[in-house]
Amino acid sequence: MSTTDPTEEALPAEDGGEAAAPGDAAAEELDPLARAERERDEHLDTLRRVAAEFDNYKKRVAREHEELRGRAAERLLHDLLPVFDDLERALAAFETSDKEAIADGVALVHRALWTLLEREGVAELDPAGEAFDPHRHEALLSQPSDQPEGTVIEVIQKGFLLGDRVLRPARVVVSGGGS
Image 1 (cartoon, rainbow, N blue to C red):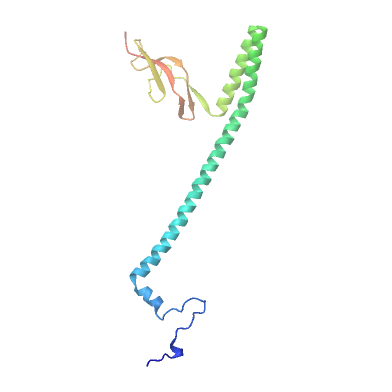
Image 2: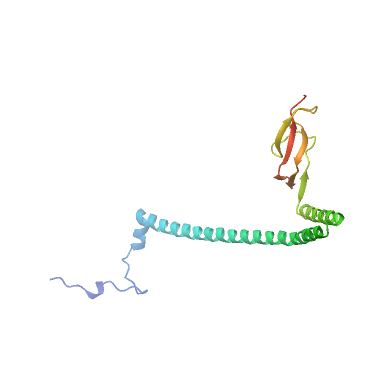
């Protein structure tokens, strides 16, 4: 008969869990599969944290971008309201049929709007006499003229720049060469 010695039984671990068999940590270090699984779990945890942080970053940037767009639109609209008021005054001048008052009102609106556009960095694109540039001009017609071929001979609609970017290309008539 085999009797077990009570001193040979595994004692409970101090942390309340199962008692670790002697050499388990060493065995895990020697077992490449267990080590690889532990490293995999650590890397996966790190990856999940980074992914969550990146997702939060994207949401924060999108929210800040929307707030910035809203503030920019609000500022522009605030600056346009006086131009709107001037336009209403010009329309009111139609009731009096005073041509001079109407002309003054329209000129006032034009000046106010152009001042606002210039303050925002808008510049007029006037290509008359320049060589046609498809990045800055839109050719509507080609006509024979005494100007060299490809020269802008007439501007149908002004173009506008914002810094060095084209907001609207100038609509132009281009010389087709000698007649």
